[in-house]
Image (cartoon, rainbow, N blue to C red; front, top):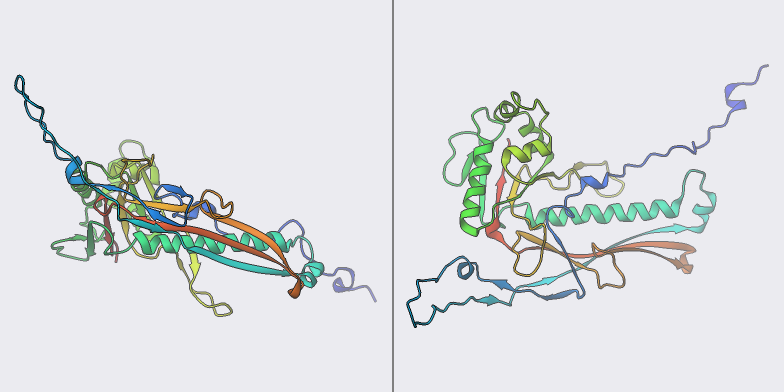
Length: 325
């Protein structure tokens, strides 16, 4: 009898490929939307100058042999930040490591896994800090018809006017703060809806003929950048059927001024205070370490990330929620 296929070949792992659902780092929004401020201490104070004082002028014509007008400004030193430490570990036991086939590298995989978990958590904290109602100077709700006060026609409606809605709010924010919004953050479904909106397509079809990328949308909305929050997460418990959703889940849009060069006397809608003084943590207040757990006959790969997402200029942003049905 001839040898069977099963007799001459035993299935083994392919060393060239493995499959893991790691996300692209560009999917995550938390490290892009607002500036990062490295801090040496877990908590501290920061100063807020009075907007009313800085945007008022007391300058007057000065007569001969008279004093110049005097003026001043207030400083609020009560605001604080606190950077909690988020942590997660994955154990790699000796027996499983010794028995693992190529191309598995359990120590590498544990490091990537822990890092991915922390990045997802960071985007979730970003969403709850910034991408929701009750945070910014104005919340605008999308409705299917007849918008009233603090409402707009949802952008998947044929008669909607997203360009006017967004640029109109940009003017209102600039008038109130002296800073024109430079950043528009979208969820993927809102981004996809805007790419197909007739008004936006009509603005470019006779000029560039380009598809409506984030760069093209930025030009149309007169902002420096359009960011899309692509990160996803599974909301189900371990072992249960996966329930996938976007980490920034609201069907919304955030129009905001985000300072590209944070420094003293520079406003911004938000800042991320990263506790870089925590035992050698890197620029985002994160570190991954590996250490021996002899009682478990395993090595532990542990990740930590210490940060505070702080909304510091509510009047520098407008949140559009229920932007599509």
